[in-house]
Length: 281
Image 1 (cartoon, rainbow, N blue to C red):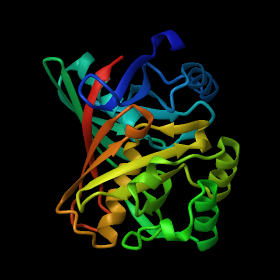
Image 2: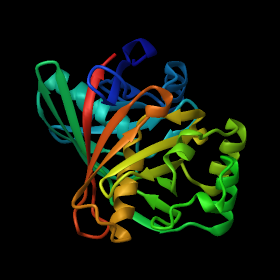
Image 3: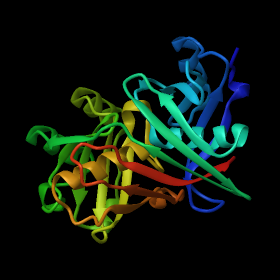
């Protein structure tokens, strides 16, 4: 039976030997019960822990993700961490992942001390965010309508989980992010979003982001692959000149710099490839 002692701790989207977002990875012969997975995730305390067990087909894995407080349908950084763990155990390869609401893949490569992984996200979609929700969310962080980058209107984007995207027009304002965790939890749960992605476009292909994750009981995530995929899909939807890929710097303002790359196809709604390095903690 899988216990907290069996959980491998890996930082995904790391910047060399530093930074990245810690995730738990538990690989067993069978998935524990939901109650046990939830208890282990709470004990580990990372924003997400991935649980994996062999599927019905070769190289296929049944995967579930838990934050300290809730199950989430998809987690990008925990998927990268899982890819790294599978590579360490089975060698380089592409692994099929059967999630609760989608089937995706993660590819991992181990080159000396460097482990890198790339996931193919679930399909993407986006829609205009409700004006009341936008006003409420801006107020949560002490922002106003004049802080919004008009080139990237507020939106609900999805790449395996609903995410509210708010683009700011000032890097300093992004660095000043602060909010009340309990109020943030109420706002996110009432809106049915997993996280709010605050972004700043330094250029057409370089973005700085911060992701409060109050819905999962975490003040801020230093790297969020699901949000990166959702953002990339949304930029495609609004015909942003992304040139086929974007680079994302996240976690810098919390001292855990993380580097993510999202590769974007022209096909509307198609999966986004999100990649980065990983380090065993």
